[in-house]
Amino acid sequence: MRTLHDLGRQSLAGLRVLAVLTIILGVLFPLAIWGASFAFHDRATGQLIRVDGQVVGSALIAQPSPSGISWFQPRPSAVDYDGLGSGASNLGPSNPELIAQIDQRRTAIAAQDGVSPEQVPADALTASASGLDPDISPAYAQIQVARVAAANNLPTQTVADLVAAHTAGRMFGLLGEPTVNVLTLNIAVQAAAGAH
Image (cartoon, rainbow, N blue to C red):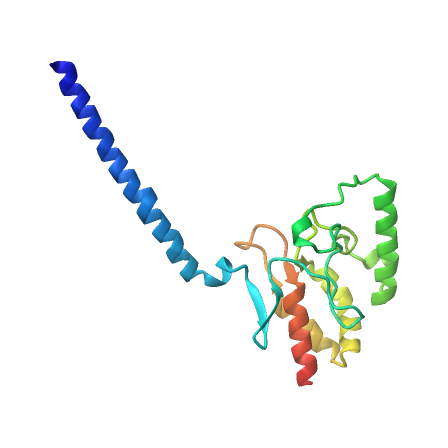
């Protein structure tokens, strides 16, 4: 009789736990996630960027800049900015192929932006781990300012101000490094050139 009573109590306790967890995990948690998608709609939809009602890209994924010298260039991509094939080159720092790529990029960027090869920052020379990093360093953006300003008939200070306006600081003021989103910066340059 004692064991039957204990079994009944344990079963009732188990059913209570099941009911509580079902309500929390089956109802409240999905509602909270659904509500968060409304509160943070921009983040829930991939931070799509629209110009004149047309989606031109995402602030989260790099894409190649239009050809020519008129625009800020993103980091190199080992996967040609293909989101389906995200990944790195997997070449080690002593790999002759990677060293040759870095030397070639350094020479090309220095010539294109009119700076000495020593001024070309590391993020201009190496692809990110995903090949889809949408951001560049402020240093890489700064060496491109004069070229982009001249190509768009804009004052250099205007383009430098756009770089400053599109520079995001460190997370919580401590983590990571400042970054510049290439897509949003190029859209701002295009708008300034159109208004100029």
